[in-house]
Length: 369
Ligand SMILES: Nc1ncnc2c1ncn2[C@@H]1O[C@H](COP(=O)(O)OP(=O)(O)OP(=O)(O)O)[C@@H](O)[C@H]1O
Ligand SMILES: [Mg+2]
Image (cartoon, rainbow, N blue to C red):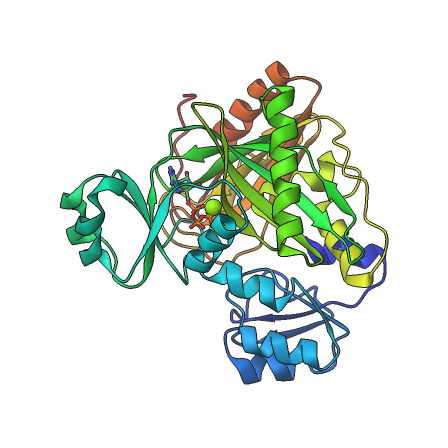
């Protein structure tokens, strides 16, 4: 998605990824198979780069610091990434900057949970290495300690959530900031993954203003140029808490490709090049529905393409991953509408028709619930 946009500007993009069949491999200017958590690999890959960016947090930090010391522009700043890579440091950063976040404590392993029974029910989050809901588990009571994962973690009080929001913020070198409309994230409880999101979020103006203000505060606290996706909890008593921040293009900004004047990928490119930030205006009511693999593993096939393309302002994105498996994000569909009621209907239609399954299994139409 980043490359699609970069092509318009005739900007060469080189990509490092461990998967030889990474979806971008046929369209990148140069593709290198290799591990981004290996210092030497990252250094040799980016030796000749002008700008270095990331699409996942788990990139070797010292390699990025070295590249920055060599005079390359590195976005996000490695010092910011160092904080974000470790959920313990990240939560402490919010607390130290007076940014509201769920109460938490740092523990060395699950044995310590019983000493913090006052935190329960809680969420246990591995300090490093988690992604897409992996490394996060609810702990309802001390009985759950047995199945808790090992290692240094954040034990975080369960928030009474009314709605989960995300605000994308872009901060340039001069400290100028632009924000996108807050989006509402709707979760699929089966996979603990975002099922779909919608923009604008169905919240009142004070909540919208508060969410944007909080996201700006987070970007200013990091005090470095970057694209930040700030995930928020709106609690049942109308407080806004920061859950976590991703310093990169994010799933909660995929709708911006069609729904906004300048997409998150366009902003990132502008930021990399030191160009003026883009216009974040939302053109319509929008939803982004994740296409998540169902029915096991194998070569993926999408059903419902005919129906999707028969719907107005509906845009399927297939990521081109070679293998699907249950719960894997395989693509997404963005759909635009004039109002929330129309959007509700299109979301249901998209979810009804669009399904990614292994090629060799027959599919059964999903019930419309
Ligand atoms: N303190 C909490 N109270 C209630 N629910 C929570 C809490 N922390 C996390 N959750 C739930 O778990 C989800 C995943 O948590 P979190 O965003 O911290 O993990 P993650 O693995 O980094 O997720 P992702 O990469 O998918 O954003 C949240 O979006 C929310 O639904
Ligand atoms: Mg999250």
